[in-house]
Length: 147
Length: 147
Image (cartoon, rainbow over all chains, first blue to last red; front, side, top):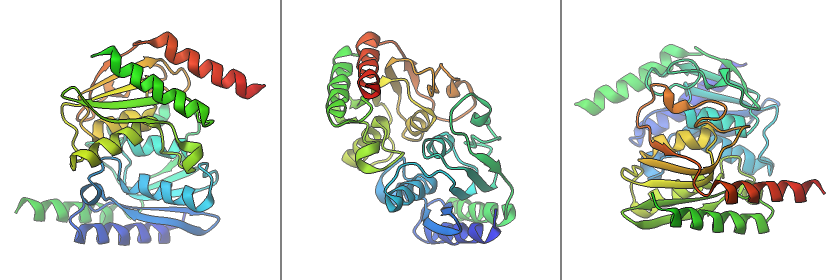
């Protein structure tokens, strides 16, 4: 785990923020190389699956020409929802490092932890990395939106 | 619920079978109109997120120009994995109708039922529709693959 990749995920989240997307960023790293860096694009693409994690996983797999990302890490600013936590298993991600917890949709400890069940290919989880920066960005976004 | 849409999902699964993909098909229907019909394409696209359900949800949302598919049904030949069960919530799918149960990755009753937890926008579930046809197709595929 290396905090510098969370900094990149945060930079991606900020780019999303400026475009009016919920500011969440994700980065896929393998062997110290950044394979992909994405932000949430559900509004831009009218795509309910276009979360930062899914987009980063897709792009990383495309780059490697293999849908199996064994040995890769997924850095993401917010605790993944069930879709993204599931996508990480399907992609054989080895470690997920997330920033803030999501009490509404978090599937790796908040609403439940789906990795406590007997699914195959479950990544290791690390949480709370740059948590304050990750959550502040989201709070600012929703505060501004409510105005 | 109308079995004719499961027949379309099965036809899609058979098209996938011929291409060497795990034969799973999915259809999104709204107001009696088929918005999308897809099969699993993980091999073809080198994309771990290219399950039939995710592809069908993406295409349906693209067609409507809205990532919210309120009032839509998702027909799928196999019980969704966590990623796909999660994508259906994110897309506000109203009902999921699936054929066969998946003891390995099924997230709507087999390994666990993630809709028993307090996530928002959970679809209603109907299972066992054309179950025998759905499971036979998968069994035949894996039997042939092992040869």
